[in-house]
Length: 282
Length: 300
Ligand SMILES: Cc1ncc(C[n+]2csc(CCOP(=O)(O)OP(=O)(O)O)c2C)c(N)n1
Ligand code: SF4
Image (cartoon, rainbow over all chains, first blue to last red; front, top):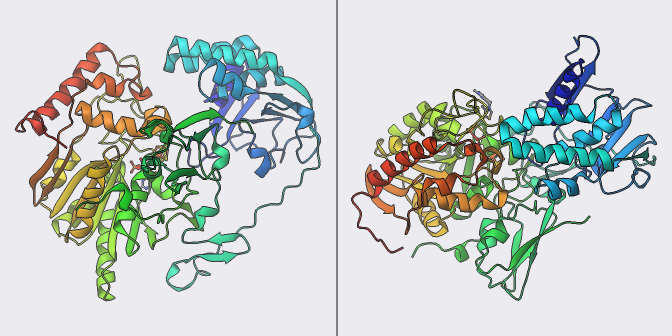
């Protein structure tokens, strides 16, 4: 939606623009991509963008696992949602970098950690190619139409705040990304019968039960805290945790933060209110 | 004695590390079902969210034999697997878990066939009331008025114009050994029905209400609460039947207006008073239909 909104703002200023998502499963929390192309001329190219001028990163935990600068032009810029200053961010090379704490802005102005509209303001400022006024108009049209005028205005305010708060500088370089090893045998190479048991490979554990190696804790914005004095060991949270990452130790709930996505169901369902949700500071 | 939460084993047969959206009810459903079904179970999933968040080749969250085929043939696949298992002289439980799209719409012929042949399998439908995996398209299960990407809220047509199809009744009409509607908001009822399905022979159909924070646009923390309000408002009913005869209906202790159910869901945000009234009429009708013959108060 944000990519479309930026395109719409560009069109309002007499540009041509196209935007489209990366094809794949679109689910909250999972890394996804979207692309926007803006030009003064008709755009005939329909491919994904491999050498962008700007890369916008909504979730800074991605910086640890993905080289977001891959393909970015030498004089390109990366715009990141983070509470850190540009020179506090280390990436694979030194490039133009702009940062803004969009998560805090969204929580303050929208009450939810949904940062895409805030980041539109940040991007407008970073590119200087569309005005903040057009971004606001585009947000009102895209979000205001769907979610109501009030929600539209809140989002426009969040974008404006990110526009004002953006810090521009350079990030540090030198971070190494070891590409994840893959283990992807074809059907012919598969063990007879085509089934895989649990198997240690050079890419780690694969097959039955191997998803336990996939740590989903970095999806979290809010973190639950269990008050063991209040916990009565009823196992309601244990039953309800979508991740299955709560264990009972000495009749008290213990949460495994390697997997907790911070959904808040445990806090909501605990019959004695022993669990509270707090904003996580990383 | 029926199962309690405290009787469930600690070991997960559907592991953490899966990639469902935060607050999704579907992993809660499958993890706890698996705790009841046990290790000697073979699971089949067609195309749906569960398939994708439960594993992407070569990684997988299942700790039991698991397979995937096409979107439309859950009923046929589990029939075949069970017969193959039998041929090998084993008696593993064979379970197919499909979404509402895979059950109400594209999978209904294979499902109906398997039910009619009384195959010895369990078919589970986790019902999140739209095709969620591909980005929230309406299904036969989507309730009246709900906004989806294929029933958007326009100036003339605000959301889906039809009511939710009564799939559970279609399955009851197959007069199979066991069918039940469930919700994780009612754990004791949920576990009892899962156990009953496990211990019954022949075709069993379990239909679990499964709130989806992404598609319904509600706070992820409210997924269980949505399940509760659905039952209390009459938008979902918990009952079971053997050979087509209803053997139990759970009547909630209070009845809430549908307004309270739809209040916190973005997919109903555009509702006018008129639309609320129309949905209320549907819920009232269902309420009467299901609970009409019951005494007013029924202790749990
Ligand atoms: C024959 C066929 N058509 C379309 C698809 C694309 N597809 C994959 S998952 C899916 C939606 C599944 O919806 P549902 O069964 O309701 O499960 P949910 O994702 O909502 O849990 C669709 C349409 C497919 N895989 N196969
Ligand atoms: S889209 Fe809905 S059903 Fe699918 S994983 Fe997300 S919350 Fe669950």
